[in-house]
Length: 82
Image 1 (cartoon, rainbow, N blue to C red):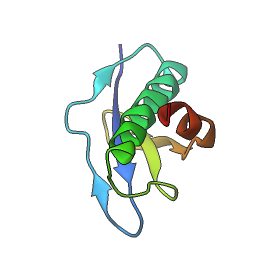
Image 2: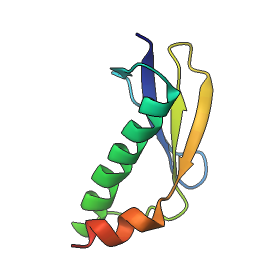
Image 3: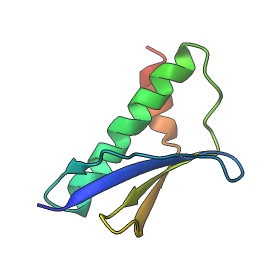
Image 4: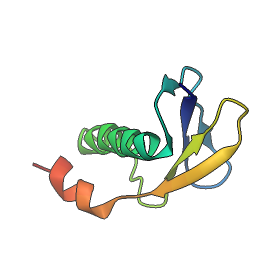
């Protein structure tokens, strides 16, 4: 099973690297996991963290190649507020 990594791309060149990654069956499962990363980010925002509106979660393979970028999911922002 391939390992995927989920780096958070902040404004500018600031990146929070995922050094652990997670084994998942395919890119579709990795995209679902990226939404879970967003849920954690939005919970932190509710606790007073920086506004992530312009951030993205990048899905990378084991070689560090970016496979997809998942932008700010505005529909999750409403869910995290409750």
